[in-house]
Length: 258
Image 1 (tube, helix red, strand yellow):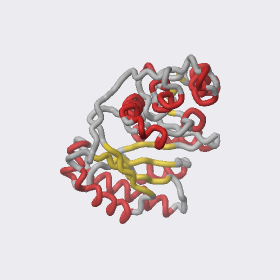
Image 2 (image 1 turned 90 degrees about the horizontal axis):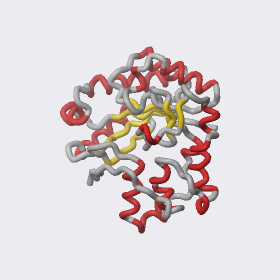
Image 3 (image 1 turned 135 degrees about the horizontal axis):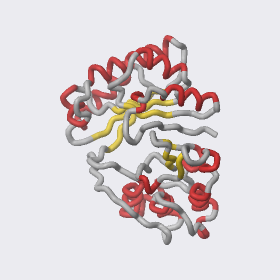
Image 4 (image 1 turned 90 degrees about the vertical axis):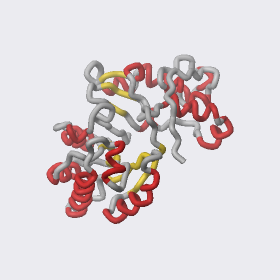
């Protein structure tokens, strides 16, 4: 099973965790893929080497500008020059060690204040040698599973075209925060959305527990999925496959970039 372990993604940068590479190494030894999201304001050459040695699968780097002024408008107190130096070090170390991993993605959140620098950022990323660049619409508040569902509810004509019939996250990935909370997908982060805690119950028991089983039933037997848990009951898949059960619980106003 190829899982994703995102440590501290909710509340802090994973690279600030002194044991992060021990966790990644443990996952690698157990044939579990790992993904980290970081702003890369804090990194060293030693950390870059440990990232490669640990077998880290993928790292997404949040860099939302091509100039310091624009970058710091959102990443307050962030230092773009330092981030770019750290990124270049990671790319260089990966090449020196002859490794294809971790895959490096420059992630750019687009707002009104920085949309004019998307092209510049893509050019910088290509020159540095990252593996890919991904651009997303930014939000002024956390964009979550409910907002995504409401987006499709308001644009019902798109749901058949854009939303599939299976959520891969429930079978192929897991998201664990620094407190040990286990979440079913990357858009879940509230305490009410947790499926278990690795400090209270083994991961195996959580993975095969009632919450996961009831959530998966939405896809294996949607007509009889009567106990779909939060947050899955308010997700786009529930809206499509079992609309009578769909319950949008929270919503944050999404700011769409042009």
